[in-house]
Image (cartoon, one colour):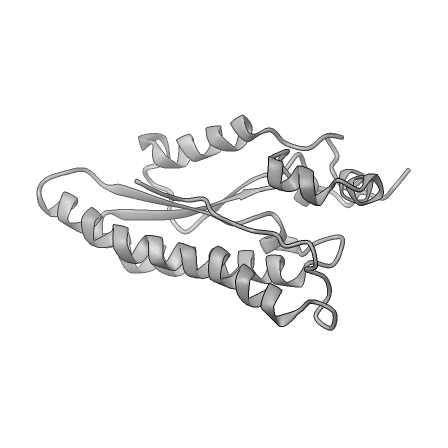
Length: 178
């Protein structure tokens, strides 16, 4: 099992005109190239395991709910990078399905991690995001971990090329400030 779970959201990531090229490139390097390299090195080991009589293997690539709908506030590099992860995951799923390797994307909404806490240190910025979550709170890491466990398990053995969205309802509803 491979769980590609590295990502950055850099503070000056904004709209296409304002985002520094260095921010865009760094975001793509970590969020997209990192997933590619993880798969590049894990897939041959997975194929060897399967050839030796081991069971099927699972790749879990962490994308984001913004890969499906865009962000409520400008963050062009992050959103583009997670869309690329989603497309790459589907491509990998199709290529390797008949070889016993499944690939799925885990698409969390905003989760209270130290990275997000730093990004949302400004209360106005925090509230601009929180207002879009129908459940009224940010997610917790354990909630996303449970989704990853499902994708890694035999319970999802006939699932490949899919997105598991865990976002507190963001993608299910259009929510406006009260």
